[in-house]
Amino acid sequence: MVRALYPGSFDPVTRGHLDLVERATRLFESVTVAVARNSAKAPVFEVEERMQLLREELPAGVGVAGFQELVVDFARREGYGVILRGLRTVSDYEFEYQMALTNRHLAPDIETVFVMPSHAYSYVSSSLIKDVVRHGGDVSSFVTPRVEAALKAKLR
Ligand code: ADP
Image 1 (cartoon, rainbow, N blue to C red):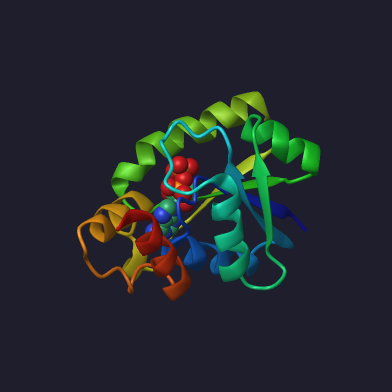
Image 2: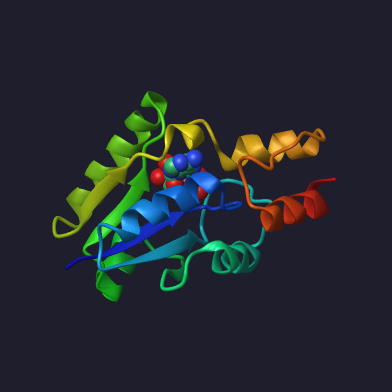
């Protein structure tokens, strides 16, 4: 039985992230979503806001955490055997491949596992959703009503 850690920016959580978590809960003993505090991207939501939205949207039993160190250091310290990542399109592959092999070099005992979302969400990204909201578009197919409201409050 393996516990999985799903690290990322989650700025904000989308239906694609939620789809991935739902699939992962069927594969692993437990799943924890971990928000990176040191992401290079300029985020719209504070880490605590992103964690709160995750807590509100994730199914019961899925954990939420924040972390600042290398993801493999956090995973090892907290006893996670798997790092979960999503693969949407071929363009995700190159970066994810580099990151997975770098993490394997740093921590050979931790395995990265990729899961594909439903094709309905394979083109959904937090950054594109933010652009659509900024320009007044409808994102209700891509995020939950609560996340949509939080986005509108931030961006309009
Ligand atoms: P990061 O800055 O680490 O890429 P993201 O929140 O953008 O953070 O993504 C975290 C993980 O979730 C990545 O593995 C990414 O590929 C995956 N992901 C993002 N959007 C989706 C989606 N629509 N469907 C499935 N996986 C996704």
